[in-house]
Length: 401
Image 1 (spheres, rainbow, N blue to C red):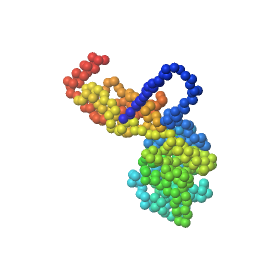
Image 2 (tube, rainbow, N blue to C red):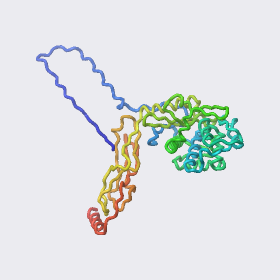
Image 3 (cartoon, rainbow, N blue to C red):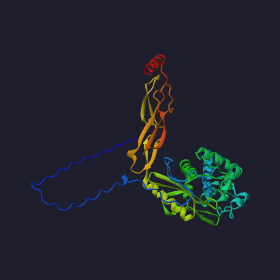
Image 4 (cartoon, rainbow, N blue to C red):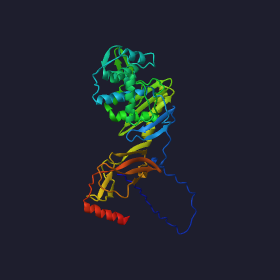
């Protein structure tokens, strides 16, 4: 429940008077009381090198900071997070299995092997490997050949797999993305945005944590070849546990990163950077800034009453309203007491009412800006009353109109 409280303490000071005035030494200026850190404004985010970037709070999905977050960009190998999401979803649906034998076809080997952008897994051509191994090879080594082989196994062809990618992208709320391959190689209709990619990263962590965990594997060996994860942050900060790098000439250097410190998780996306080192440095700077200056609170708990409203023509005369899911808000640290809730609820509510039916809207504002908005729903059903009570309420409603 939202608690907004302020307390002010007044202290009186009595000053004794001497019987006769006497010269006083020059007054020494009093030292200013140090400002509490929570009273200071939130500093701007660090300067980031790149064409577009975003920092998102995982719990709420709120953008904490960003630059050109909705500008169309080439996602490069961050595309493989979408490929991983599709594979994880198909595994969860029972359509494929971790021990499926996946063929490294000649098409996958030629299109995705060495000579493209150097991202290949090393699985032998015209031989099979367990799907789980192939997937880890794609995630850790950014193997284009593994991505294509997996796409062919799941959907018959990479083109058909791309249709699945777009369908799942739409389902999780990616509104400005289009995929035409499983690898991230440049294509005329292959694009995304920093915001959409952060939404994808959030969905991967939320929906398929076991598959997401593959992203923190630091190295993977196929035959005689051992390759290392290209996400440098896995070695620089223990709180970082994923997620994916990307690079080609059209996209520049890109990095989607996620870190968890305590109960707070953040997701950063940096697109179009100038080097591997720069994308890592900028991503970690964003994450550090976000963890230092922002916090997330549960304003309203799910299925707990936040308002009681009168009901006309019902077997009961009141209905309890609340939110169906926890209402979380991300805000600058120390600003929790400044949140202001408001509710839009119809003046007249008439039974019958179904449990979960939206009755109104609750909003939370900070500095005159809406930071969160959720439907207010009925926490229980209210059945329609009998004939005579309905007739009586009809009269009262007319009388009070």
